[in-house]
Image (cartoon, rainbow, N blue to C red; front, top):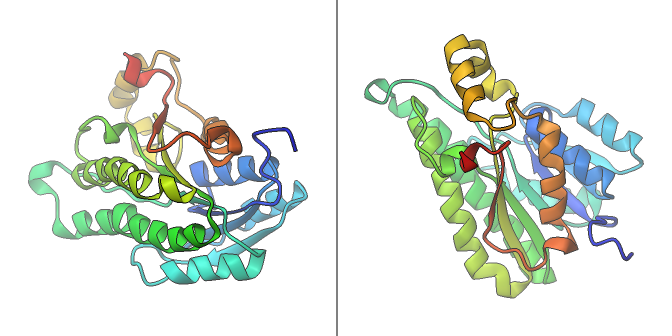
Length: 251
């Protein structure tokens, strides 16, 4: 009970929990004691098995977050299946790559709808529940492109810049209501979303040369940051964007 990082008795919703960063965060929260609702289009069977092996409860909630249609259902199912909602991790996201002069409206809308619009409305739905109970932790997954422009990913950059602003806006409105809203900005993490960059020899080399740690991050590197922001240890942390980037922004 004296461990400020203990999440025992808490229920967390993690979107995009089937693989990569979402899976790693879900497992880290479970290891800290939380029960997990794994949300996504692809059933997170492997994640659920690993969580249950840790002795925690886990449930799958099927939802396509390219629209806001399932948002309220996600919250309702988590509460119904696991008995509450204390933590929301907004991790699900997509990326589209093309030169800005060639970028299509369809690719723009797809990324903004998933990465920003659905995130806001899921925060809203979870926020209503958390405000009513007087407590809650929301962690949005930002990006290095929350701070920088990047290249060939205009809608992704816009969405992640938006995540930074949204995180601060919600912290301003909800801090006094017992809700902590923060974000994690991963650096270059080896996931499916970055496979194209890793496979591009020149781009991969330029990225590694810029990272003081000299290597790509692993999804598990995000776990400790997530546990911290979701725990009592971060009760006075509000509207912060925590970079986990191997020193990328420091260079």
